[in-house]
Length: 284
Image 1 (cartoon, helix red, strand yellow):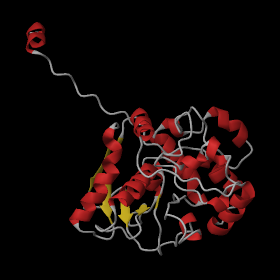
Image 2 (spheres, rainbow, N blue to C red; image 1 turned 135 degrees about the vertical axis):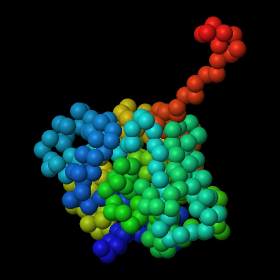
Image 3 (cartoon, one colour; image 1 turned 90 degrees about the vertical axis):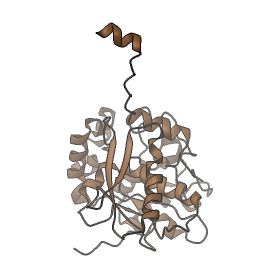
Image 4 (cartoon, one colour; image 1 turned 90 degrees about the horizontal axis):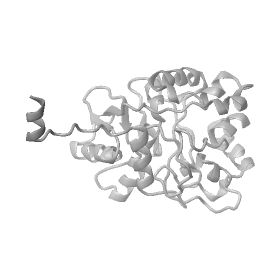
C-alpha cells in the first residue's frame, strides 16, 4: 500500500519564522470507532466521561470516538521500538534514552527490538515531527511509521532531542497537546482555526471543533488541574491562530508537573522492602 502523504502541519505553515513543531497524527475517520473500542478494551478509563455524553449524544459514533482518550492503563507502559530507516546504534540508543526520560517517576519503558516494534520510528526529511497518540499506534499497519523525527542525526543539538523526541514520546504515552486545555483553547481564534485546519487537514467545522476547539475536561484522567504552558506537551501555537496574534510559546523539556502526572496514571511499581535480620527471625 502506498504511504499516505502527511497533511501540511503548523510548522510547514509558518516555516522559516518559528521553531519546527509537531502536530500529532490522527487516524482516518473509518478507523476512529475501532480505535476507540480498542483503547477502552486496553484501559476502560479511556471511555468518554459521563459528563461528556450530553454534548456528544447527538453526534455520530465516529465523533463520539474522538472524545475517547488513548492511555495504556495503570499497569504501565512497556512498548517495543523499531527503526524503519536503520540508523546507527549510537543514534538509536540516543533516541531511546530520550524516549525513556519519561520513566523518572513512572512505570514507562521503551525498548528496542530488531523485529517490527509497536512504536516504529522514521527520520524522513521534510515530513515534520509527529506521532500518533497512545493506543492509536496499534491501528497503524505494520511496516508504517507511528512516529517521525524529521532529519534527526547525531549532530542534532541535545536541546532538540529534549524538545522534540520527548514531546513525541509524550504523544505515544497518550498525551494530547496541552493547547487542548480550557485556558489555552480560549486563546485560539475559532474562525482562523476552522479555516486553517479545513485547508491543511481537510476537516469540516465539526471535526475542527472536536479536535482543536473542544477543551479537555479538567479534573479527569486526561488532564492535570490547570493548563501548563511550560509543559513539554504544550507546543508552540503560531500567532496566526490566536485571537491576540501572540503565539503560545510552549515548553522545551519535561517539567515536574509532567513527571508528577505521568507517575499518577502510570505509577511506578513499588519495590518490596528487604526484611531485616530481626524480621526474618520472627517469621521463622
